Structures are given as structure tokens and as C-alpha cells.
Length: 206
Image (cartoon, rainbow, N blue to C red):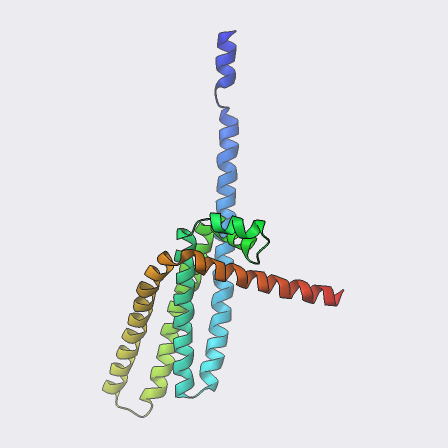
């Protein structure tokens, strides 16, 4: 009887295999999702930035460039905040039906994926597009200048974009760690408002 009981207590290798297979399938789905998301966001950002850069003045092009850098920094801020915040305040918000409570819990329970999307996907895309935007701005500035001046302007703008991005992210990381709950709350409320707008529009269509 003891031998039978001991055998029944041993883990089923088939169950372990199925469990690992489920994890692999889930990881593969996430990789495909993040690839498609990066492709879509990159295409949208590139399209709108090129449209704006082609139709604006030099001052407008600088404004677009700074906006792209700011978006990258803000998403990096959120990506750090979701990894540092705790769920407890959001459970309290959700129990009192405060807007953003359940959305905040969802963000924190998916902190790894949210952080990856914010820091890796959006952050890296903004970094790449800001480099392209810097080249366009440099082209506007160096029109009619000598080749040496052109290279110098391109070098200075590329260095400035990189320095501003790194400085902004370094500055915001400490803010994100110290104010993680407030930042996640702001993001959760924004998601709640967007969901509410969509639900209203769907009701109107019906």
C-alpha cells in the first residue's frame, strides 16, 4: 500500500510536459503580440512624424522632435513606475469604486508586459524616430551651407537628441520610483476615461 501511495504522490511527467508546453505557447503568443504591436506603433509614429515634419517650418520641426523625445521619456516613466508600485492602494480604490482602481490593479499585475511595452517598444521606437527627425531638422538647417557645416550640424543634433533622451530618462527614473503609485493612478484613470468614451460611443451607435 505504501508503494502505491508513494507512486501516486510522484509528479506526472506528462503533466509537467503539458505545463511547460503551455508556458512556451503563452510566451510565443506574447512575442508575436509585441512584434505586431511594435510594427504598428512604429508605422503610425513614423507616418505622422514624417507628415508633420514635411509640412511644418523649422520651428515646428523642432517642436515635433521635442514631442517625440517627451513621449519616449513619459512612457519610460510609466514603465519604471509599474514595476515599483504596490497593489494595496488600488484594491482600496477598486473596493470604493474609484475610477482607475481596477485598471491600476490590471497594470500592476501585468507589470512585466506593461514595462516592456512602455520602455522597450514605445521608448525604443521614439529613440529611432527622434534620430530620423533630427536628420530632417538638420537638413532644414544646413540647406545652402558648406559640407563641413552640414556634417557638424548633423553631428551636433544627433548628439543633442541622444543627450536629451538619456537626461530625461535618468531624471524621470527617480521620480518614477518615488511617485510610482501616483503615476500608475494617473495612467489608470486615463485608461478608465478612454474606456468610458468608447463605451459611450458604442451605446450611441446602438
